[in-house]
Length: 91
Image 1 (cartoon, one colour):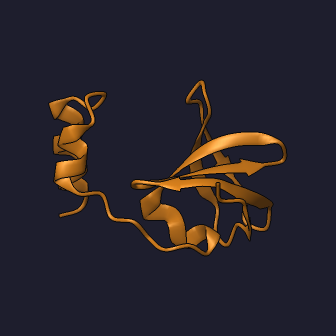
Image 2 (spheres, rainbow, N blue to C red; image 1 turned 60 degrees about the vertical axis):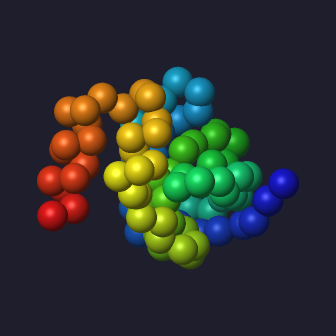
């Protein structure tokens, strides 16, 4: 299991675990990466757990993980509308 300390380099948008509430964490806060699998990071900041999109990995000093269309299609929780929006976002 990974437990790596980090400092937030830029404000980041995250989703709380397990309820998925969207929030912004401010630059300068410190935390721990508790998991780094697939295209996301699970982080703990001030005792709260969050999911960070891998594309924002550089904001915590880690590698930026690009989302692939294949990955999105494999995740059943995403509808076709969401996939279209994500594709257009990166064009």
